[in-house]
Length: 257
Image (cartoon, rainbow, N blue to C red; front, side, top):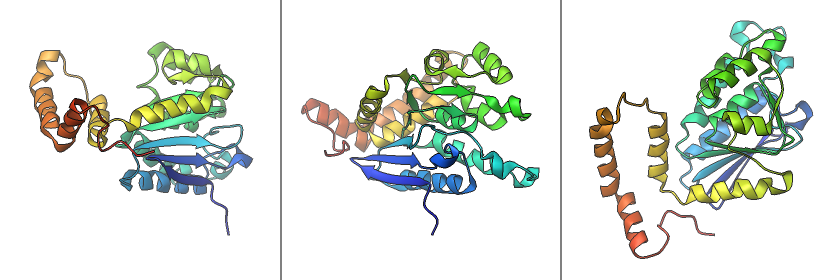
């Protein structure tokens, strides 16, 4: 029996998805991709899950595509063909996704970090868009990474393939925070706890709102946004939240400890 490479666990409304393939630096092998995609689907469909944590075992978060599997394969057989689905699952998840990095990420691993809503790493974590160094390009991950990075940094780092540290990653928009290793779990937990306080439908709709193209001017969007806002104020979830605020209690969607 083959050992699983991705573990899935749910506690207190938080689904923790753990990459556990340290022998190859959590590279995106066919088995890992398959199990990761299945875990993301499971979290999406489970009503008990409010937030998703993406983490890892071993010293490396994710080294990108498994190059041993890629060697000798034709364009139609490359594992990278299955990767868009994983990036899309992370990006479009109606439940917020928090990435916890206790080590480096490379190439496709950075694409996954960028696809998450929030990302926290330790100072020892390093990053590199290493694709050009082996004669390939960061095509797929550009779709999740470029919306996060400022343009000057993107040009520099995509073209050079140079390694950069977690503090630089915060400065250019790839990470939300860089914290000492002893504080990593507490910092991630603060984000996870805060996210469980939001209404499930409101969180999903807010993610969609963040992904919308912005209107040319505020006045061009007021009518649509007013309709959307009013619908949520009048919704069952919105009314429960307003009632809970007035009664100085937690809304009924907050997971019980």
